[in-house]
Image (cartoon, rainbow, N blue to C red; front, side, top):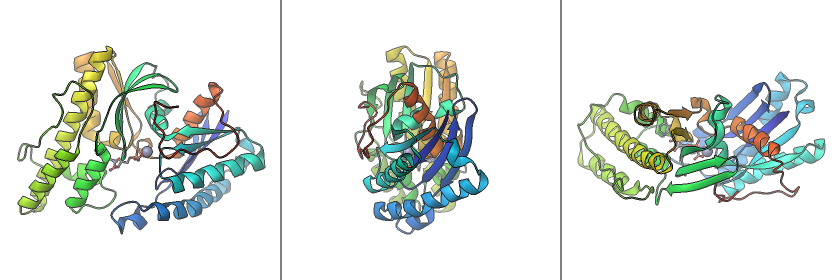
Amino acid sequence: MKVLGIETSCDDTGLALYDSSKGLLINELSNQKKIHSKYGGIVPELASRMHMKNIVRLLDKIKRKHINFMKEIDLIAYTAGPGFYSSLLVGATFAHSFSISLNIPIVAVNHMEAHLLSPMLNYKSIKFPFIGLLVSGKHTQIIAAHNVGKYEILGSSLDDAAGEAFDKIAKLLKLKFPNGNELSNLATKGIKDKFHFPRPMIHHKNLNFSFSGLKTFTAKIINENILNEQKKADIALAFEDAVIDILLIKTKKALVKKRWNKLVVAGGVSANKILRKKARIMMKNEFSGQAFYAEPKFCTDNGAMIAHLGFLYYKQARMFPLEIFIKSKWSISDL
Ligand code: KG4
Ligand code: ZN
């Protein structure tokens, strides 16, 4: 079965074709970073207008490269939420028009679940249950994943998401937008232990996070210091260290609580090289287990993860009614 995946939840427009037996056949992505960088953040109204242009451009590009593309699709999967309402609407409308005109079944999928299961694009061997660390620009959650569609949220951020904290500190350090990756690159030039940042809530029994205090502390250090390139790198490293420590300390508690030894790290922040390395070492040394993540290009938003999850929904016969379905706030525990 071949599934067309459509992603428009934020500022990336993604179209992909996933074959349930051969894997990913097509993966096209168009981003709008240049436009939003002028404003230092994503402007939803502009994002939805750009999605309208980009989605048609991407479809034309795919049709030029793959002449039989339209005839090959057996199922359409689109991101129905969470995300910006106006951005979601573009993908949903496009998906439904496609579905009605070509008489192809359609499923509406949850963006965060798609992130969480995206490592399965490469590792078909990942089996439930596992602990998921879902770290994106808007979410930081620890999840007990029991099956497709069956998740228990064990902990969440009470304020900023980890990605959001990366973005805000990167902005204060005057790095290019989008910023998480830039901050992480800068941190590679930092000298260890020049600064030490707090790790809020690590001693609390619950599995929740808080990043806003760490952010304020870092902002204060940035304001108090005369910044040269080395100092910026030292701050970036200390900040990155603190965020990753917090994430892994809480994840470890969840693994101990459930007595599981499989970890899936997903979402944009899972592209972070240090996080990947430390999670791998922790799983091996402390749990005799394994950590899984998606290929870096599938960590951030893309159509491939949507197509892949669409197929899994189809296998469970979880189809949605024909009217346009979008849910700007749609928790993974409420599927
Ligand atoms: O999952 P995603 O593409 O979008 C949402 O669904 O929110 O995640 C984007 C987030 C941004 O906050 C970005 O700064 C962060 O992922 N990110 C990173 C890295 N690459 C992307 N954060 C830390 N280190 C990275 N290498
Ligand atoms: Zn995302």
